[in-house]
Amino acid sequence: MFTGAAWRSTPRTEDEVKVRDELIAHFTAFANGDGTKGHVLVHGDPGRGKRWVLRSALGKCLGSGVRVVQVSLF
Image 1 (cartoon, rainbow, N blue to C red):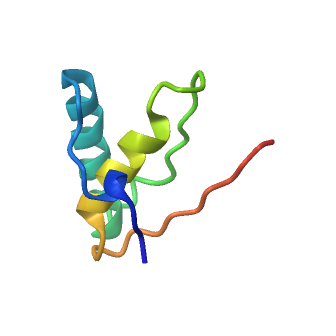
Image 2 (spheres, helix red, strand yellow):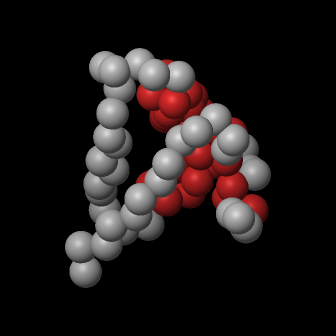
Image 3 (cartoon, helix red, strand yellow):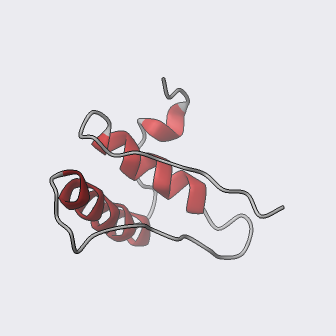
């Protein structure tokens, strides 16, 4: 399944804690059938921690029914 430290790690900064907690709430609500929650699009400059924060949040939601699709534009 998923491997690597990011899937099991905790956020490193206060901002990452806030974003991770919001993502966990969003993913959990969606997995529980909340129709107002849906896709999450993450964008930003390279090296800002997008993948790390997503993997950290998803690692907390594994087993809840959340499905993940990664799309590369390059």
